[in-house]
Length: 235
Image 1 (cartoon, helix red, strand yellow):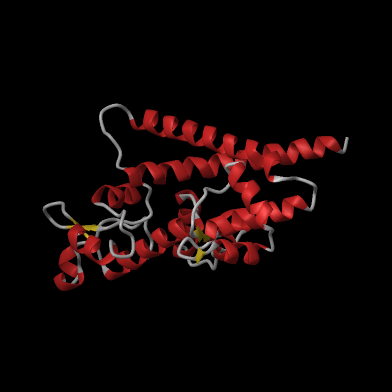
Image 2 (tube, helix red, strand yellow):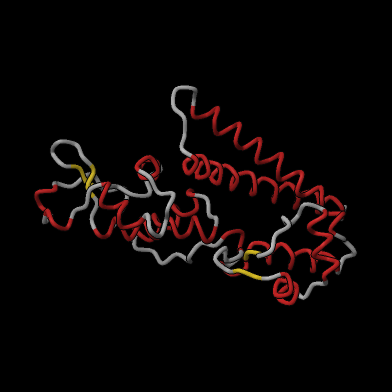
């Protein structure tokens, strides 16, 4: 199904197979609690979905639309992918190509961290092959929040710190990365709100969606700038 298709004549599709926005939300919000009518419209604006319209102009969704939505929302939640990347994959698939499933920065879902996973302090130390001192250092440096139960994302952070330690970097050396991230998130939030204009307040989920989109752009920029800087070290 191509998302670029024009609105179809709903009379050509059995009425029982088409869902209203409310029915789509009822199907998907148990799995994606932050889904809202405004987010559905946002995804439509980004041309990720193209619901049909009734003669009165109301949006209606087919079962294929619902599965497409589930796919997009899953990639956003589990892979942290910008919508632009997801759209490029879907456009290729709609064109009959066989694109590779996109992953964030070349990482798979497991390495990005399963936020449904839960670890005790002893379990995360064992899984990351870390020491208790290294975990404490990560907490002190603000790289991991102190807590009784840790997430899959915490495991990714701690594992990365373990790997960085092989280069002689300690958590205290990496504190600047946390500060830089906090500054960048502030910049992203300010930019997204300014671009939205003063007339309409965004929902938290829409703010996060647009923030992730801009974050993907900045991540690419940072990667290229770092690559160029490293190349200059060789000259």
